[in-house]
Amino acid sequence: MDDTAKRTLIRAAMKAPYLERNEEHDLAIRWKDHQDQEALHRITTAHMRLVISMAAKFRYFGLSMSDLIQEGHVGLLEAAARFEPDREVRFSTYATWWIRASIQDYILRNWSIVRGGTSSAQKALFFNLRRLRARLAQGSEPLSNVAIYEEISNALGVTVADVAVMDSRLSGYDTSLNAPMGNDDSNNASDRMDFLVADDPLPDEIVTETIDVERRSRWLGSALEVLNERERRIIEERRLQDDGATLESLGEKLGISKERVRQIENRAMEKLRTALVKVNPELSLTAA
Image (cartoon, rainbow, N blue to C red):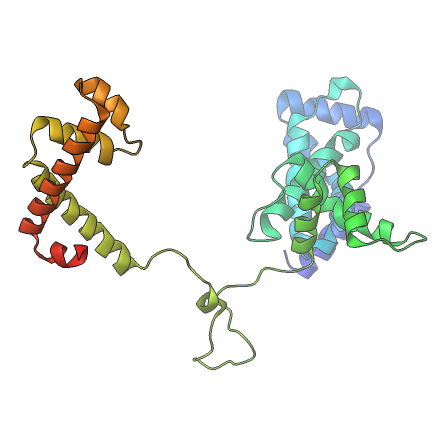
């Protein structure tokens, strides 16, 4: 919607006649029971000034007034679709909630690429933080940020940490990671992305580690074949499990003393070392 269209819409909304209670009730019934498009048009036209008034309250969030009006109109249509004329409630009273909700949802979706305010408490914090902060700042005595955050936290039922995070978000705008650093417009200028530190291993390191793990697994599987059944059981339960069995528990299972288990384990480990070095002589240098 361009500026000319917006001005035309506003003028038309201000000229639209108000609806008397009985007339509004009759139109609402015609729309609800018979889907009378003319009745819907008259109801929504008469309440567009309400949409414009509500949109103006949210103009300080940096979004287009035209878009806010359009989203408010969506809320107005939703209210018309859900309105129950027999409840003896004026349509403007009912529609106000839907108009506000539609505009607020639009702001939350488009104010920042980082989603926020998903819960009702977070939404209340988003839309009331600036107002409450300004009111507290006008007090007789200046308050610190900590005191202001605590007051807002108590008023809205959120944590102080949530208030601090939201205040930080509202005090700045999104910045692209691909934006150049400094004022250098040349092609050699560094992006913010270039200064992000990643603790994860590099792709070639991941591939190397994967290959090494697979190779060691094959070596170990081959080496285990040199062990007898009891030696292999002791090595698997003592060395190859996250929670290795104790010498005492293994001794009870095998019917031998824990000292005997230790002796068999040491002998089996020596057999494994010999078998592994035979498969890959380089391991003897590593062990040395």
